Amino acid sequence: MSISPRVVSYTVASLLVFCSVLGAAGADWPQWGGSPARNMVSVEERLPSSFEPGKKRPDGSGIDMSTTRNVRWAAKLGTETYSSPVVASHRVLIGTNDAIDDDRTEPTGGGALLCFDERTGELQWKYISPRREDVQGRASSDFERMNLGICSTPCVEGDRVYVVTNRAEVVCLDIDGMADGNDGAADEAVCSVPKGHAPLTLDEHDADVVWRFDLLNLPTFPHDATCGSPLVWGDYVYVATGNGINGTEGVANANEDAAVYPEAPSLIAIDKRTGKLAAVDDAKIGHRVFHGQWSSPAAAEVKGEPLIFFGGGDGFCYAFSAFRPDRDSDGLLRTIWKFDCNPHDYRFRDGKPMYYWLGDKRFNKEMPDDGSFASPCEIIATPVFHENRIYVAIGQDPMHGRGRGALHCIDATQKGDVTETARRWVYTGLERSLSTVAVDDGLVYCCDYPGRLHCLDAETGRLHWIHEAKAPTWTSPLVADGKIFLGTRKSLWILKAGPQLEVLSQINLGSALRSTPAAANNTLYVASQRYLWAVEQKDR
Image 1: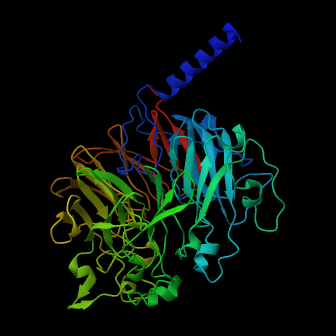
Image 2 (image 1 turned 120 degrees about the horizontal axis):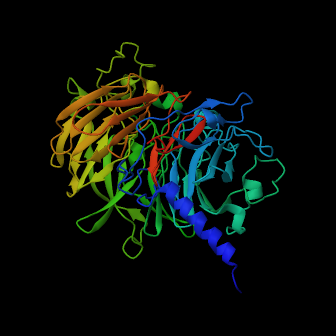
Image 3 (image 1 turned 180 degrees about the vertical axis):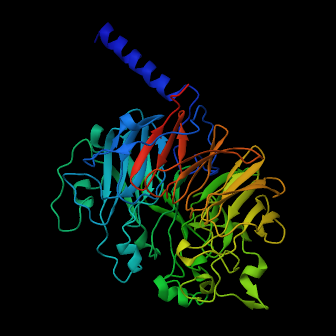
């Protein structure tokens, strides 16, 4: 078959335009933290120091692009967005809730995963994940009614997308959606609509489900939300189950085996090819979990041994052996080391154990809400691996109020209970944190809940500076192109990276940021609760 010179010319021209837009030096950002190490640092360059997000069109159809600056495209999301964007295979994916403009799908209080064209922002396909109707008595009421949508940041490997949904399901999707036919075994026409509703008539704009794994069948008991991001290592997908306690009743009885399923695993490995359970952790964290578990796993090789790192709901950071079927016939992820990230005076007062609920302003009316109160904390942030060290902060559900936090630097090469031997330094000058750190050029950047961004020496923990964003912060700092990008409840901050504090800009996006920015292919991706922007340097 001969190909027309005109077709060849058009194809080459299109590729050249695409490459000029994205930049030859760019790289994808296919998962939470960009890589299994989860370090929030991107290699991207030519990112702007400011941009204008534009004004909303009067008819509610989106952003008026004529009012933007340094923006390639902007796309509407749902009404709640906690997932962060990932970029792979010329696509941008992000989770949100299902309150999206869709003439076929009515909002159900469920979630949605949206896939956009990286260059144009055109919606390629969507996966709708309806609210569960079978969790009464199995999960907290918050799990049913919060309408947070898909909070998990997806992970892309090859032509597969892995994400944890609002339904506590791990889902594997074809990155091409239905455009290349149905590659999976699942019935998307049924699973993407609420029970009892008529099946959809599928088209190329729908997701293609390869397999689904229901975490509730383990059984497990997610508190508030399942929001851990999947990690792919070898042939397995590692996922946090979210196992926790039963709402406020569990908080009041914390430290008394409050978990509904104390024997349930907190971390599991699923065969990425089949969707079958392969292994569970051996740590029995459910017997000690304080509240919930929202951390995501990280991975790296340490002395030639692949390790999976996990921040537990009991305040310990764990390193597990990566699953090997030839060695781990009992299906266990074995604990290689564990480290208590709570300083002694956070767990004990006057020689007696501190109850977790004492750090919750809703239960302890005498607790000062100024960040000074020390009490046990879990790990919500993701452990970050860098040069044989783990950097991780502790915190609590932000609904509990303010309190003292801690940021640890841990030697990742040891074994056993390494609490007393692996601590390289600890910094207690911050409050409780939900933030995963960025480690770059000898510096560590970490933000605490009230919005104070701390810059520390990565080797010693010595403080260089603190930036006061003065707004509650649920996101993590991203370092790229010599800049720090940080989203808060009020705005996006852009600062100069380095040992001297310098603010470059503060940008109001019209609603809170619960999503951490991502940088890929010379483009910054920023999501508010309702919109996603592709930001690029146009001003010269």
